[in-house]
Image (cartoon, rainbow, N blue to C red; front, side, top):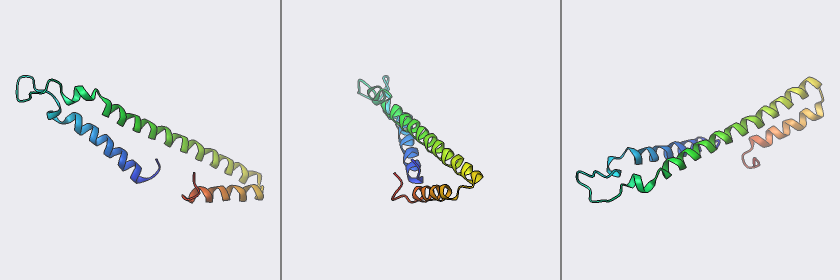
Length: 106
């Protein structure tokens, strides 16, 4: 995930999971007002929380991979600048341009 919309979607997902577990109506009140035998929380068994946490973990891993790739590219670029090989520097600049173009960035 590398756009603000993707981060907003993840935050929205986490908020919905928290709202579910924070809602008192999702718990059975055995002494009072509910006739349900099992609460929604018991039926859910934590699946919403596990799903939201998995999405957050996947995001963290993806961000780290992107950072590692970027660091490798920058290290290679810095090394090419030191060596002074103009052809290689131009090739690397083309790669950076492609990375900046979302249509070509896979």
